[in-house]
Length: 297
Image (cartoon, rainbow, N blue to C red):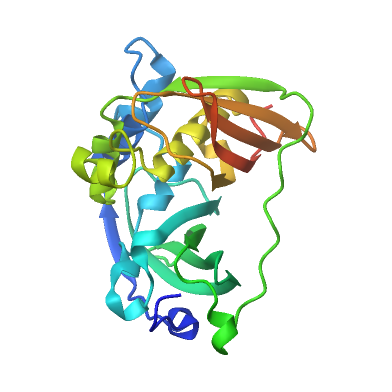
């Protein structure tokens, strides 16, 4: 554990509300960064990247009112070089508007010690609300793995109890599989959503971190998996996907193909899933769960 780390300081960290105005252009750019529109003759894909009858992908909520890489602030005490995005969960309380004016409210809810040699977990929550009405649009929970900050409970600091683990996918064969390619330039496109970490753009920095090339953002892989669920299980209606959560297992290189295996749980509206890179036969998203609103009868 790096000297100066204070778990309570993280729990008490003050996040100023962030106002975010986004346009239909932003909604289309987000979808394009996730590969929508790669087939110019796919009329259904135009729902996501053409202004006529435009619909927003629900996972775009994760880039709205984002507080930035605040963990890099020296006052946090976090060894940010060893910080990894571990899990993400999203609940939509209404269909995401294609353009809007929103306010994001972020707080740290848990700081969990896993041991001096195992690191620590930090769980943060962000609520995105309509700036005019105050209506809640989305709630996001992010688990960050602080690999360099474990052991704080051994020096008298409080550790929160861990939350329930995400469920593993069923051991049986999946009910279906769905493949989507990624664009070679997808990381360069996705970083325009607000995450400018050079690991996703600069080959020199990626190489220093041990990667053969810049890697795709985990939340981009998250959004692509959501596209697979929408296309294969929700009649390609993005408004039907109102909850999705996942664990990040391995990085994706832009240009690789993502195959999502899907299991129906408790009927057609609850799903379990995992996603792998076909070219390397490697699971990159695990312990995935999702819920769909019923379709039109």
